[in-house]
Amino acid sequence: MTGPHQGRPAGGAPAAGPTGTPRSGTVEPRFDELIHAPTRLSIVALLAAADWADFKFIRDTLGLSDSALSKQLSALEEAGYVEVRKGYAGKRPRTSVKLSRHGRDAFTRHVAALQQIVGPAGVSVLP
Image (cartoon, rainbow, N blue to C red; front, side, top):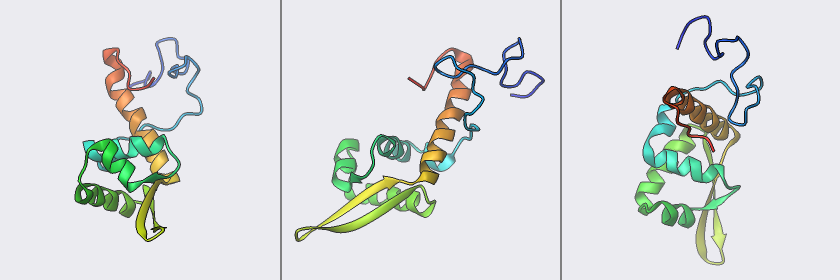
């Protein structure tokens, strides 16, 4: 959207955030093609609500196969969006995943971009 009132209501005040407060300190919305793929978006959204998550938990929660999850995590790790920690619990291998600061920022910007897209229709992707 372009024009003299971009991001501002007709009165010229900053647009209100989801809680009604001005958006003076919010992030710049940016659509992220890597995150937007449905499986990766589900992974990143799940990780945004956690500190570290076990591979098995992510796999089972999202209903993915080991290979599908591994492939998506590799793409997210290559982009610097997740940190992967491999270790052992006893003799069993254990993989844990965390959303990196870069990944969290990208997710926040992506959600803001989605809100910007759907907002004019009177709907919200934000709680």
